[in-house]
Image (tube, rainbow, N blue to C red; front, side, top):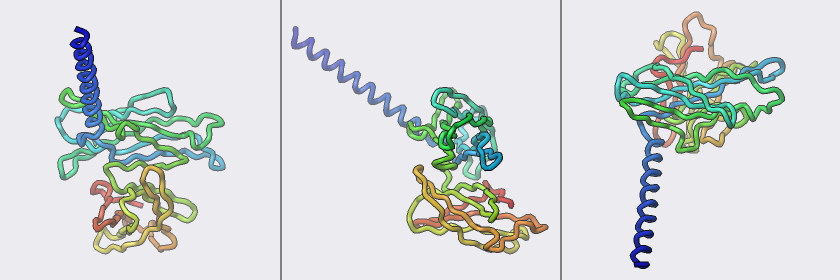
Length: 256
Protein backbone atom coordinates (compact mmCIF):
# COMPACT_ATOMS: atom_id res chain seq x y z
CA UNK A 1 0.00 0.00 0.00
CA UNK A 2 2.80 2.41 0.89
CA UNK A 3 4.55 1.65 -2.40
CA UNK A 4 1.37 2.29 -4.41
CA UNK A 5 0.71 5.51 -2.49
CA UNK A 6 4.25 6.70 -3.22
CA UNK A 7 3.82 5.92 -6.93
CA UNK A 8 0.52 7.80 -6.99
CA UNK A 9 2.10 10.86 -5.39
CA UNK A 10 5.01 10.72 -7.85
CA UNK A 11 2.60 10.44 -10.78
CA UNK A 12 0.60 13.39 -9.48
CA UNK A 13 3.72 15.52 -9.16
CA UNK A 14 4.86 14.63 -12.69
CA UNK A 15 1.43 15.57 -14.05
CA UNK A 16 1.60 18.90 -12.20
CA UNK A 17 5.05 19.64 -13.64
CA UNK A 18 3.91 18.77 -17.15
CA UNK A 19 0.82 20.97 -16.75
CA UNK A 20 2.95 23.90 -15.54
CA UNK A 21 5.34 23.45 -18.46
CA UNK A 22 2.45 23.38 -20.95
CA UNK A 23 1.02 26.56 -19.44
CA UNK A 24 4.43 28.23 -19.64
CA UNK A 25 4.81 27.24 -23.29
CA UNK A 26 1.36 28.62 -24.07
CA UNK A 27 2.13 31.89 -22.29
CA UNK A 28 5.46 32.18 -24.09
CA UNK A 29 3.83 31.52 -27.45
CA UNK A 30 1.39 34.36 -26.83
CA UNK A 31 4.27 36.80 -26.35
CA UNK A 32 5.78 35.62 -29.66
CA UNK A 33 2.60 35.95 -31.75
CA UNK A 34 2.67 37.52 -35.21
CA UNK A 35 -0.87 38.79 -34.61
CA UNK A 36 0.33 41.93 -32.84
CA UNK A 37 3.86 43.29 -32.58
CA UNK A 38 5.42 46.59 -31.72
CA UNK A 39 6.58 48.26 -34.94
CA UNK A 40 8.47 51.21 -33.45
CA UNK A 41 8.18 53.57 -30.49
CA UNK A 42 9.93 56.63 -29.13
CA UNK A 43 10.02 58.84 -26.05
CA UNK A 44 9.21 62.54 -26.46
CA UNK A 45 11.00 64.87 -24.05
CA UNK A 46 9.60 68.34 -23.35
CA UNK A 47 12.53 70.66 -22.64
CA UNK A 48 12.25 74.00 -20.90
CA UNK A 49 14.66 76.69 -19.74
CA UNK A 50 18.34 75.70 -20.02
CA UNK A 51 17.44 72.19 -21.11
CA UNK A 52 15.35 71.42 -18.03
CA UNK A 53 13.00 68.49 -18.69
CA UNK A 54 9.45 69.63 -17.97
CA UNK A 55 7.70 66.40 -18.93
CA UNK A 56 7.48 63.59 -21.45
CA UNK A 57 5.25 61.14 -23.29
CA UNK A 58 5.66 58.33 -25.80
CA UNK A 59 4.19 57.34 -29.13
CA UNK A 60 4.56 54.49 -31.56
CA UNK A 61 3.17 52.17 -34.19
CA UNK A 62 1.85 48.62 -33.80
CA UNK A 63 1.81 45.90 -36.49
CA UNK A 64 -1.52 44.02 -36.35
CA UNK A 65 -2.81 41.02 -38.29
CA UNK A 66 -6.32 41.78 -39.52
CA UNK A 67 -8.21 38.86 -38.01
CA UNK A 68 -11.60 40.63 -38.00
CA UNK A 69 -13.11 44.06 -38.50
CA UNK A 70 -14.03 44.49 -34.83
CA UNK A 71 -10.87 44.60 -32.77
CA UNK A 72 -9.30 46.48 -29.89
CA UNK A 73 -5.62 47.40 -29.56
CA UNK A 74 -4.45 48.72 -26.21
CA UNK A 75 -1.11 49.83 -24.81
CA UNK A 76 -0.63 48.85 -21.16
CA UNK A 77 1.95 51.31 -19.78
CA UNK A 78 3.47 52.87 -16.69
CA UNK A 79 5.67 55.87 -15.93
CA UNK A 80 6.82 54.47 -12.57
CA UNK A 81 7.14 51.08 -10.91
CA UNK A 82 3.68 50.88 -9.35
CA UNK A 83 0.87 52.33 -11.47
CA UNK A 84 -0.20 50.66 -14.72
CA UNK A 85 -2.57 52.47 -17.08
CA UNK A 86 -4.17 51.72 -20.45
CA UNK A 87 -4.40 53.85 -23.57
CA UNK A 88 -6.23 52.85 -26.74
CA UNK A 89 -4.37 52.65 -30.03
CA UNK A 90 -6.08 53.87 -33.21
CA UNK A 91 -6.14 52.48 -36.74
CA UNK A 92 -3.62 54.25 -38.97
CA UNK A 93 -3.16 52.38 -42.25
CA UNK A 94 -3.48 49.02 -44.05
CA UNK A 95 -0.26 47.74 -45.63
CA UNK A 96 -0.07 46.00 -49.05
CA UNK A 97 0.35 42.62 -47.30
CA UNK A 98 -3.02 43.04 -45.56
CA UNK A 99 -1.62 43.78 -42.11
CA UNK A 100 -2.67 46.98 -40.35
CA UNK A 101 -0.67 49.70 -38.64
CA UNK A 102 -2.14 51.16 -35.46
CA UNK A 103 -0.79 54.24 -33.69
CA UNK A 104 -0.71 55.04 -30.00
CA UNK A 105 0.16 58.07 -27.86
CA UNK A 106 0.57 57.91 -24.11
CA UNK A 107 -0.57 61.00 -22.20
CA UNK A 108 1.88 63.73 -21.26
CA UNK A 109 3.26 63.45 -17.75
CA UNK A 110 5.03 66.19 -15.80
CA UNK A 111 8.53 65.45 -14.61
CA UNK A 112 8.70 64.94 -10.86
CA UNK A 113 10.73 67.63 -9.09
CA UNK A 114 14.34 66.58 -8.41
CA UNK A 115 13.86 63.54 -10.63
CA UNK A 116 17.04 62.54 -12.46
CA UNK A 117 16.95 62.41 -16.26
CA UNK A 118 17.49 58.66 -16.18
CA UNK A 119 14.24 58.24 -14.24
CA UNK A 120 12.12 59.60 -17.07
CA UNK A 121 10.81 56.51 -18.81
CA UNK A 122 7.85 54.61 -20.18
CA UNK A 123 7.45 50.86 -19.76
CA UNK A 124 4.73 49.19 -21.82
CA UNK A 125 3.23 46.10 -23.48
CA UNK A 126 0.69 45.66 -26.29
CA UNK A 127 -2.70 43.96 -25.94
CA UNK A 128 -4.77 42.90 -28.97
CA UNK A 129 -8.37 41.68 -28.51
CA UNK A 130 -10.21 40.13 -31.44
CA UNK A 131 -12.71 37.26 -32.02
CA UNK A 132 -12.89 36.62 -28.27
CA UNK A 133 -9.12 36.06 -28.06
CA UNK A 134 -6.42 38.19 -26.46
CA UNK A 135 -2.88 38.41 -27.83
CA UNK A 136 0.05 40.12 -26.11
CA UNK A 137 3.37 41.50 -27.22
CA UNK A 138 5.28 42.09 -24.00
CA UNK A 139 8.80 41.78 -25.44
CA UNK A 140 9.18 38.14 -24.37
CA UNK A 141 8.07 38.89 -20.83
CA UNK A 142 10.43 41.84 -20.39
CA UNK A 143 8.03 44.61 -21.52
CA UNK A 144 9.28 47.45 -23.70
CA UNK A 145 11.26 50.22 -22.05
CA UNK A 146 11.95 53.76 -23.25
CA UNK A 147 14.32 55.92 -21.26
CA UNK A 148 15.84 59.35 -21.75
CA UNK A 149 19.20 58.23 -20.39
CA UNK A 150 19.52 54.92 -22.27
CA UNK A 151 17.67 55.27 -25.56
CA UNK A 152 14.70 57.08 -26.99
CA UNK A 153 13.63 54.61 -29.66
CA UNK A 154 12.55 50.95 -29.57
CA UNK A 155 12.39 49.03 -32.86
CA UNK A 156 10.68 45.67 -33.12
CA UNK A 157 8.98 44.92 -36.46
CA UNK A 158 10.70 47.91 -38.04
CA UNK A 159 14.42 47.95 -38.89
CA UNK A 160 14.62 51.74 -39.22
CA UNK A 161 13.19 54.50 -37.04
CA UNK A 162 13.04 58.16 -38.04
CA UNK A 163 13.44 60.74 -35.31
CA UNK A 164 13.71 64.35 -36.44
CA UNK A 165 15.85 66.56 -34.29
CA UNK A 166 17.07 69.98 -35.34
CA UNK A 167 19.98 71.36 -33.36
CA UNK A 168 21.98 74.48 -34.18
CA UNK A 169 23.79 72.44 -36.84
CA UNK A 170 20.52 71.06 -38.27
CA UNK A 171 21.16 67.37 -37.84
CA UNK A 172 18.61 64.76 -38.89
CA UNK A 173 18.66 61.59 -36.73
CA UNK A 174 17.73 57.97 -37.42
CA UNK A 175 17.69 54.76 -35.38
CA UNK A 176 18.49 51.32 -36.76
CA UNK A 177 18.42 47.73 -35.63
CA UNK A 178 22.02 46.56 -35.44
CA UNK A 179 21.75 43.63 -37.88
CA UNK A 180 25.47 43.52 -38.74
CA UNK A 181 28.71 45.44 -38.37
CA UNK A 182 29.19 46.38 -42.05
CA UNK A 183 26.31 48.58 -43.13
CA UNK A 184 25.49 51.67 -45.16
CA UNK A 185 22.79 54.16 -44.20
CA UNK A 186 21.63 56.76 -46.68
CA UNK A 187 18.95 59.40 -47.10
CA UNK A 188 17.36 59.94 -50.51
CA UNK A 189 16.13 63.51 -51.03
CA UNK A 190 14.00 65.13 -53.73
CA UNK A 191 12.84 68.72 -54.25
CA UNK A 192 10.80 68.11 -57.40
CA UNK A 193 8.40 65.30 -56.60
CA UNK A 194 10.91 62.53 -57.43
CA UNK A 195 11.60 63.70 -60.98
CA UNK A 196 15.19 63.81 -59.68
CA UNK A 197 16.76 62.87 -56.37
CA UNK A 198 20.11 62.66 -54.60
CA UNK A 199 21.48 60.18 -52.04
CA UNK A 200 23.48 61.22 -48.97
CA UNK A 201 25.52 59.06 -46.59
CA UNK A 202 24.65 59.12 -42.88
CA UNK A 203 27.19 59.01 -40.04
CA UNK A 204 27.24 56.53 -37.14
CA UNK A 205 26.81 58.10 -33.70
CA UNK A 206 26.32 55.50 -30.94
CA UNK A 207 24.96 52.09 -29.91
CA UNK A 208 22.38 51.27 -27.23
CA UNK A 209 21.66 48.34 -24.94
CA UNK A 210 18.39 47.51 -26.75
CA UNK A 211 20.25 46.56 -29.93
CA UNK A 212 19.73 49.82 -31.80
CA UNK A 213 22.18 52.37 -33.17
CA UNK A 214 21.76 56.10 -33.78
CA UNK A 215 22.89 57.65 -37.07
CA UNK A 216 22.62 61.20 -38.31
CA UNK A 217 23.21 63.50 -41.26
CA UNK A 218 24.30 67.14 -41.08
CA UNK A 219 21.92 68.96 -43.42
CA UNK A 220 23.96 72.15 -43.69
CA UNK A 221 27.24 70.34 -44.26
CA UNK A 222 25.67 68.38 -47.12
CA UNK A 223 23.95 71.49 -48.55
CA UNK A 224 20.54 69.83 -48.32
CA UNK A 225 17.88 72.41 -49.09
CA UNK A 226 15.00 72.15 -46.62
CA UNK A 227 13.51 75.56 -47.43
CA UNK A 228 12.75 75.07 -51.12
CA UNK A 229 9.40 76.31 -52.37
CA UNK A 230 8.84 72.78 -53.62
CA UNK A 231 8.00 70.21 -50.95
CA UNK A 232 11.29 68.62 -49.92
CA UNK A 233 10.79 64.92 -49.29
CA UNK A 234 13.08 62.13 -48.18
CA UNK A 235 13.21 58.42 -47.45
CA UNK A 236 15.80 56.36 -45.58
CA UNK A 237 17.44 53.14 -46.68
CA UNK A 238 19.76 50.80 -44.84
CA UNK A 239 21.86 48.05 -46.46
CA UNK A 240 23.30 45.24 -44.33
CA UNK A 241 24.09 41.53 -44.92
CA UNK A 242 23.16 41.88 -48.60
CA UNK A 243 19.66 43.19 -47.80
CA UNK A 244 18.29 46.71 -48.18
CA UNK A 245 15.56 48.01 -45.84
CA UNK A 246 13.51 51.11 -46.62
CA UNK A 247 11.57 53.50 -44.43
CA UNK A 248 9.26 55.69 -46.51
CA UNK A 249 6.78 56.50 -43.75
CA UNK A 250 4.34 53.76 -44.84
CA UNK A 251 4.39 55.00 -48.44
CA UNK A 252 3.80 58.67 -47.58
CA UNK A 253 7.49 59.72 -47.45
CA UNK A 254 8.97 62.16 -44.93
CA UNK A 255 8.93 65.94 -45.29
CA UNK A 256 11.43 68.46 -43.94
